[in-house]
Image (cartoon, rainbow, N blue to C red):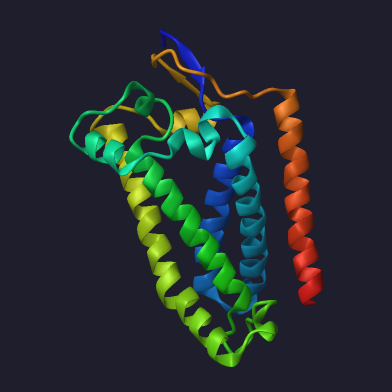
Length: 222
C-alpha cells in the first residue's frame, strides 16, 4: 500500500469493538440455549455494561476518530452524503450513515442491558435490580428485553454486517482491516488518533474503574 497513512482506531477502541462483538454473539447464543447457560448470559451482560461505560467516557477523551464529536453529523450533512456530496473526512472515520449505525447500536445496547438488569423470566433468570422495581415495571422491561430489544439489536447487527460486506464487495473498501490494524492508507491529510503508551495506560485505568463500578452495582444489588 502507498500514500498517506492515518491511525484511525486506537488500540483501546479496537479492543472495545471486538470484545463487544464477542459478548453480543455470546449473549445471543446463551440466551437461545437458556438453562445453565443463563449464568454466562448474565456475566456477558455485566461485561457489556462495563464496556459501554468505557465507551461512553472514551467517546469524549479517546483518540480523535473515536470521539463522538468526530462523527456527530447534522441532518444536512447526512442528506448531502446520501446525495453523493460527501466530504473527504467521511472516508476516514465513520461516515454519516455509519455514525447513525454506531449511535443506534450503542443506544439499543444500553436499553437492552438496562432492561436485562430488571428482567425476570419467573423461572430461573432474574436480573439483579428486579427486586427494586414493581412487578408491573419488571414485566414490561422483561417483555422489552426478550421480544423487542433483542430483535432490534439483531436487525441493527445484520445491517451493520451488511454494510461492511457492501463496502467490501461493491466499493472495494475493507472496513475490517483498519479495525484490526488501526490504520487507513491513501486517505486525505487529516489528524491521526493518538495511540501511545500514555493513552493506552489511561484506557486500562478507565477499564478497571468501569469494571469496579459494575462490581459495586452488583454488590449493592446483592
